[in-house]
Image (cartoon, rainbow, N blue to C red):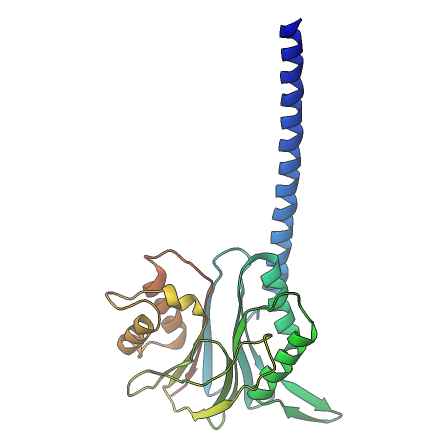
Length: 272
């Protein structure tokens, strides 16, 4: 009798384990479906192609660490001579990060239309309005979002940008040393803030690189990871056309190291 009772208990426990295993499989499939859906939605908001302008060329290298990342970028025409572009980075991965990247996409107000007239919103105002929109959501936890937004006039070569806690843009002149454009700017969605902008004149052969902080783990040869490696690589390969520049940069800094974060490299080259 005791053996029968033990056998029945064992059978019940096995049945319970099978039920739990089935439930875990169902939850796994549900999470997998949600991630796939978030990935498709996020990918649909990324530009399918980059705009072509007579005096400039754009290029991008986008490599999320996971299927759904926290990096986001866009490049878009605003009128016959202006292009808007940005790189943003939301802390974390998965569905919550993807939702915030979609919020950013919808929240960037780069142009105001008044009947038959319009006004291009300056970079400092784009970030300030986006910051206010984030604060107005009263999220239970402050999102950790960084961003650089730029307005490029391809006719006169003026590149104006503002940044919100994002890595400094890298300027790679046709002649001379690459330098970081250091401009102050607080994080988005944390507190009321202003985002001062600055303008630079670009010349034929010059390049500008916007990128996410995934670059911090990249290493080139024996240089320190991050900005030191980025500068060292850019000095040596400043002559490369912009698409090859961003592709080779990503390959050089990350081909032999584990990817710890999303990596986005968005480049602009002024044509000669």
